[in-house]
Image (cartoon, rainbow, N blue to C red; front, side, top):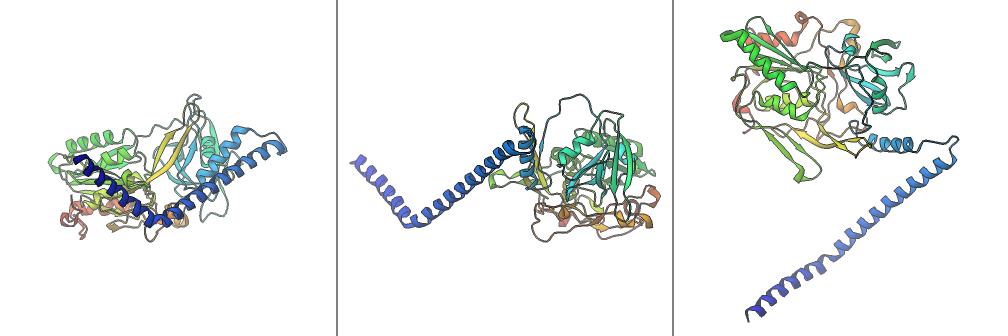
Length: 436
């Protein structure tokens, strides 16, 4: 009797499911038909690609290289996604030098996001927003971003001639740069007077967090009881490694979320939280940003701003709010650099194509001859960029005066920390911070 009852209950449940399926079957059939149609269209397009590939192989005026055809097809597919996804061939041929610039592709040309401090490019006067049109007299137009970057690399001490277009300059500028092995010191520090520690982070590489910890320790020892606070300079820092952005933010926070990343599917969401231990022992912090501050820099600025741990001064940041994952494609096949997620600040802000707005905007006094080329157009100006959630914003000043005495953002930060200048945004109000 018990077995029969159980069977009837299971049968009843199965019958209920059957009734539900019958009741909703027109929609299921329709969805299934749409999925089949979409799959069929995809296979038709792939078949078309195969036909074109075979026709090119058979009839092109010169015998093409099959591997180059396929690589070009892959690059074309990735270029249609967004400016930061690309195909990378792994290089195995010796030691090579570079120029020291972060670049992106815009309208088929190479655009400088920012030169990296103390590199050949920075020493040669390359500036954010420069457009590179020729490499050794060969046009960049028609090359992929990776192909152009590969041409910029070469043996150490070899020379490369760049032809550059700058806004406000009628004629192209030609610059010859000697390649060097790029070993960037990502953290530099010094005392401003005897009471404020200044820390400049130029990019986020494997050594950044350790460099920051050493800088804080050294500055604290130098200043002793006189130390009033820190200025963290992230201006024209193009970004770098996500884990370093998280650990740098963690150095100033006791608890709370630092950043979250969200992929296509909800289960791919990741949240990264601070661990106890503020290395500065809660000393006041001011962060400097501008139009050349991108990616990992924006994660740090956004986290410290949302937690009201720091006051952010300068101009709106670049607005690169996406995460790229390096996906190896097997031995000898290179790797895929694919945009896999967006990132969000602790308050849930997406900065994609928007950037971080400073708590206190400070514009620099720009020399007349440079005024036409001191604004960075930002992520929102890049063709094919991931769209913002809400209104997009682009364009922000990225000029840093070469002489610190002319640096208005730096002087504002120092005056605030020393109490010479007052502003409602400093010190930040912890009551308005995001919940921890």
